[in-house]
Length: 275
Image (cartoon, rainbow, N blue to C red; front, side):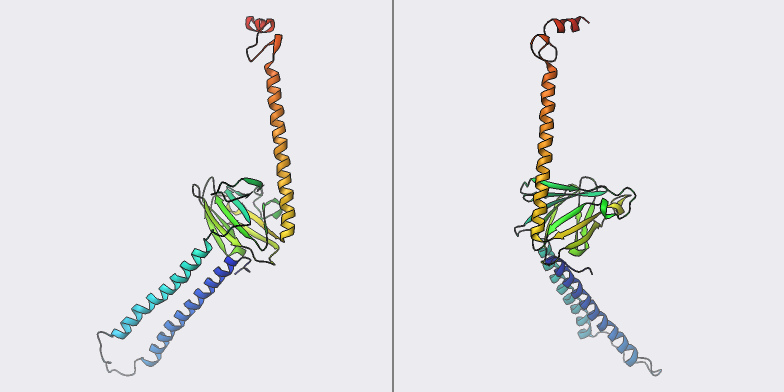
């Protein structure tokens, strides 16, 4: 298993290891009974052994014991599932993950999508043209260590699956259904990790790769401030361009003797109408 970097991943690892312990215990018991039967109840003579029709203690044992085992496994699975899907804790970072054929978009928001959070800045990926795992062409999800991160998952086309192996957890990204989960990133986990789509989503499924960069809190805050400033400058440039375009349109319509509105009035408009 990958080294867990979140509290949730540690819980998944614990459940996985506990399930193996239970499986080995059942396996040892069953194989022990096989071996005991083979060694001590093998054929020793032609005499037919005593025939019995029922053995209530044995039948009760192999009926009750599996129910107990399944009940215990179900309890721990349901408990951990509820923990993994809990999103009640206030989050430090809100990220909307948009999975599309065949790349990822990460929108950093000021609140959850459910609460109408607005996008502060985005990271949009472009699939590597030759389909190889070149990190330089993949989007990077940047997160701060020692923080609570809330993910909203959305897909505009087909089913994808958001998977970061170091999280020990993956969740489907389903069109028309916004899934969500949270992770508590541990302290001292600053490093670079990998992420991918874990659902066969089309011909270029293997191109849906992304990077995950966990930064110390101070470095992340500086990075986030740069991203917000860049997004604000881009928005200001777009607004200025739109305003300039609007002024050009107004000038084109014309006023005064040469014309007002699209149709125009005066001599020049009359000449145009005659033509």
